[in-house]
Every structure is written in C-alpha cells, then in structure tokens.
Length: 265
Ligand SMILES: Nc1ncnc2c1ncn2[C@@H]1O[C@H](COP(=O)(O)OP(=O)(O)OP(=O)(O)O)[C@@H](O)[C@H]1O
Image 1 (cartoon, protein in one colour):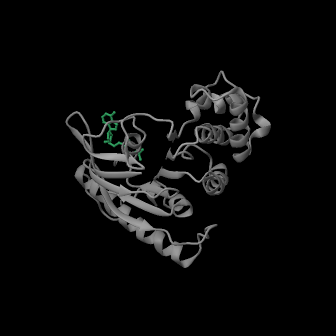
Image 2: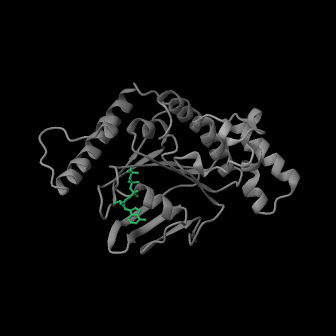
Image 3: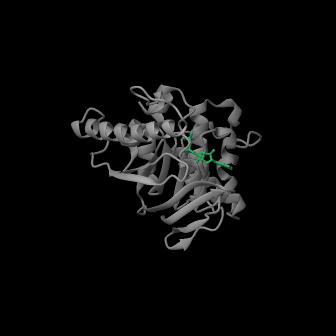
C-alpha cells in the first residue's frame, strides 16, 4: 500500500495534505496522532470510501478507486455486524457476495472463526456475544475476504481495559497467521508500541500530514518494560504532546503547563 502526496478535502476544509507513506506487504503500520487530526479520514481513503483530492493511493501498484474486498475495514463499533445473521453467516457473507461455493464459504468461516477463537459461537447471533467477541467476529469477517490489506480504525477503542489487553495480544498472533498488511489507527501509544512494525505520527489538523515515522525495533512478544520501549514511549509522547499543544493553541487556549489529554498520556 502506497500513499503519494495524498490530500483530502471536505468541501473547503482541507483535512489532510501531502501524505506519502510506503507500507510494505505484510507490514503492521500504526497511525498515531492527536484527536481529530485526520487518522480516520486517511484510513477511509485507503479503504476507498473517501476520494482523494490530490496525489494517489495504490495497492501493489494498482490505484485505489473505491471499496474493494482486497481492502478490509474493521471499525471501532461492532454495530457493523449484521445482527439478524448468525456469526457464521456474518463471516461467510463476503465470500457469498463474491460467489464462493457453499463448501468454500463453510471452510472460510470455519478457518477464520478458528483463528479468532470463536468456532464454538458460530451459531449464535451477534447480540448474544460480548463486545470483545463481536470485535473478533468483525476481524474474522474481514479476513474471510482474504484481503491484501486490513484497515483497522481503533478496533479496540470501545472495549474495557482487560478485554482490550487480551485483544491486543491476540491481534499480533492473528496478524502473523493471516500474513496481511495492517494499517491500524489508534491514539494509544502503548497499543502502537505493542503491535507496530512502524508508527507514523500525524501532525494536528487541519491539513494534517505525517510528522515522523518511528521503526519499532523490539522483539515480539513485546515487553513494555524493555528500556528501548520506554525510550520510544517517551519520544512518542513528546512528539504527540507537541502536536496536541499546537492544536489547543490554534483553538485559542492559553496553555500553562502540560496540555496533554488523558488519551495521549
Ligand atoms: N465527512 C466529513 N465532512 C467534513 N469534515 C469531516 C468529515 N470527516 C471528517 N471531517 C473532519 O476532518 C478532520 C479529521 O477527522 P478524523 O475523524 O479523520 O480525525 P481522527 O484523527 O480520526 O480523530 P479521532 O482520533 O478523534 O477519531 C476533523 O476536523 C473532522 O471534523
């Protein structure tokens, strides 16, 4: 997945400007940045949901011109699931739309429900599952399309702290098993350090761009107490804190002391 000089506008509002990123096949890239900077907007453009006003986005050299099963999107809210379908039917939906046979659909659903640890819930309905389980179903449903790129917009943002931690651990395993390229939006620095190969930090909007890209050269599974992780966390906090302060100043706030939000702390 490549972004070259990408600019995105909503009418006269310039949300992002001149974003260039090369994401290698199989890479896990986290997009981190102050609230409202344009992370979701960039991700939506990568999914083909939002058109770019300048530059271009490609996957394996082919331009992204609209939604495509090769570009799977996992949303923060599991409301994206079809409540009237069983878990198995939800996961088999994409393959069904693409004309896969009944046997292939059953196998895909079985494989990906197994990967997210939910084979035993295949006949339940989404409403009968916990928030964490519903997010697993969303991930399985996207993976069942066997996409090249999985785009995740704060997928664990609505989960309680314990479930979130389990899902973060599981995500690393699922990503390695699927071999997909992942672009993962988060405002959680620790989550990014735990998961990413590289972390792209965005500037505060409007006209947000990529400020810095940090490689995460830490062995997996990651140890948050590793001195290199502690140092990276400090550097990211400082980088994002600067952007948050800038955004607040632009909004006319007079800042005395630390203006970081709870989210970026
Ligand atoms: N459909 C839209 N129409 C107009 N403006 C929009 C639209 N979608 C997003 N924006 C604006 O674009 C900017 C970036 O929003 P976006 O949701 O991408 O930020 P974000 O970094 O994902 O924020 P958060 O971390 O709070 O989710 C914001 O100023 C937002 O108000």
